[in-house]
Length: 161
Length: 372
Image (cartoon, rainbow over all chains, first blue to last red; front, side, top):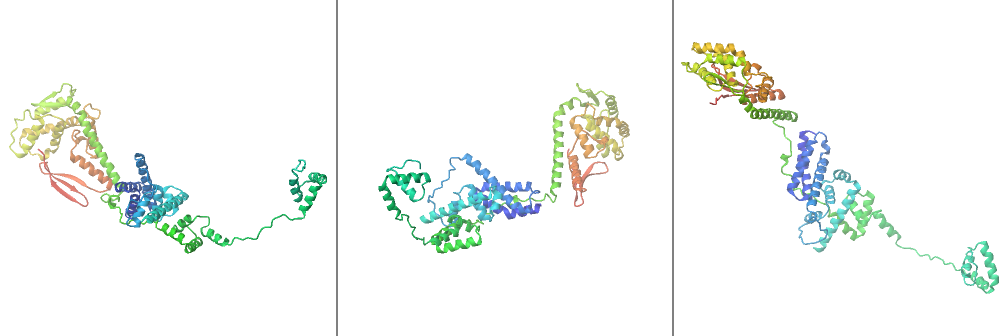
């Protein structure tokens, strides 16, 4: 991959990868760091990676970097990080996307990542499998469970509203 | 059944007899039992005349097709699995049609499916990575990556060399002082620890005495004389070190440009010229000489190998910024194949007047400022 192609990748993919990471961890600074690291790694391996495969390489690098960060933080905040998988309805939601944003944060990181890759980027199960290192069956299961959870979450909120 | 048939257990034998389940031995025993019990034989004969088997009624499940249809809409999957597969476009065309048909006839199922469709996430396109320029890679002044690395390597080498230079100068300055030769009032004085006692130094001391015994004997009347007088006087009234000796040597070389009216000075300069081989030996010690410090060695190697100076002209105690710039420029020329050049331009009296830079694209000159 040439320098020019690398810069094209920056223009084409940095927004998507940034969005994917930011939606996952909801921390702009960390998301930016992850993007910097990912493109830095891409540049280091620029001679080994085909231009056509850079997108999935970037997503994969960013995903694994993000998982590393989440795990480190989990260790730090072991007790504070207990997610409430209940259906409390204290929040007021103005629209469905807001409701969904709230719902996806209640998914575990793997479910959240695979469903985002599926919906945001339209990746196939195989591609998601390559990016995340999960096998295709696991990807399907995670997506299925995520859909069920989101559907139940939305349904329960709508029932209340 | 090998048990003995009695009036208590005969009913089981009756049933087996009627269904033809008794083996031959039992049949014989059963016949003997009936002979011994005629009342029970009469009972058996009575049962034989009735058909006691039940006939199955012709009852049918009317909703078979409905059930079959429900199963075929999802195959082996549950409704949820089928709904997710449908929204993920994972169903075949036929399966999709079956599922859609099912939804048409099942409003509750349709509502559930619509709920699933709401779980599809939409990317927020307002979120963008604003600092893309920080990620991009730009050419370094139009130089490709390989050349850039070469330049960086060259710069690093120069810095390393400078570090050695300054490092060594700090650590060996004390040693150098021990071997320094001082001259006051035209006398050569050895320091206490000095082992400088070779013939050259004595001869040089003698010569310098002959050149200018005190400096007071010279009364220059012209500008050129002033210049030379000042130079020589400085060289003899202060510390005589290698640098100053080298200056004397340089003056000797440039004597053609020096017009000194004083015959005495002319004679002295000619003597200096005659002595120049000895001065050279003193000014540039041999590598094995005990006077050579690592700093001096580095300086000599730097000037010989990088600046391509003649070994006879090298001052081992002095590396100027000019030398460093010259070396850097030479390195750049080698790497890039260009022909950039730094030059000092001299006036008739041999003093530098301008500094000139020239290349294929750009050239300029700057007046030379001498720091007093």
